[in-house]
Image (cartoon, rainbow over all chains, first blue to last red; front, side, top):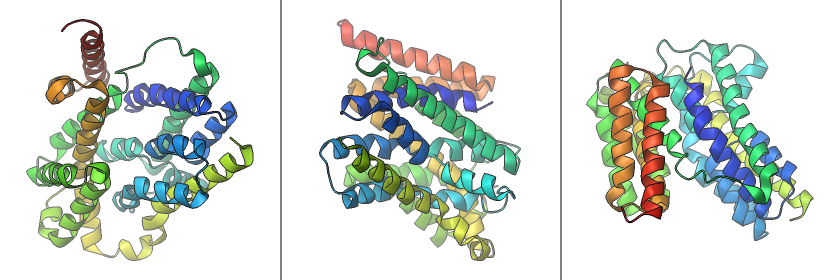
Length: 214
Length: 112
């Protein structure tokens, strides 16, 4: 059910990615390959100007490392109930974006292991569909999509409300607010990664805090 | 752009991203035995959700350029209230996104 809000965010954003990728001078099918192989929104957007400038592969690798480093911690919440099937298990790992992770961890009851992989696949389908459409339209993108990307913010808001319903603990919410507030002031360009790292450290240093969460 | 260069770049970035996402699963055998890590795994989702929400608000406001995150904060508040009372994600997302799109596009055209 919660794949619908993801679709509302992924299709337009995927379209913008495909569109910009083609505008930068690459073949349309390469945009689709990027959405199939990389499948990480922010780093896909970041790669466009870097590719256009012909930067060395090492720079692109470092960019992917920094932009996606927070994903390193997402698996920690899924260690117990990942799919048994080898292919499904590693596909889920591959496709663990912010949105897929959020939907899986906010759902109660927690989706069955195979359902998680299925959900991840549907979400990547939306993203790829958007990319194909955007790349295909190329220069002639008809309507202004400005503001439609609010759908992803709305998705995170919905999931925050649902998380709050099941575990009314101010601790993670407060930790996140403080961490993001401080990090966006001190490290505006890396606020996302820095604040996730701060929460990981807080959770490790104060296990009694983490323990109270269901 | 040269096809071979773009393809190689895609593979490199894909490999880095996959490696990051796979890291905890590769060490799953050891990590699962640490109660501290399992607690952390339960703590992180709520915290990360709030961070992603805050980050997308900041990200949007850089493009919309309405003062004081006003359009973003009001629209997010609408989504939160609707979701809390209605429990209907589609309603919440449509209402919030609709309000936001109207707000920033009117703001751009008219003297609002």
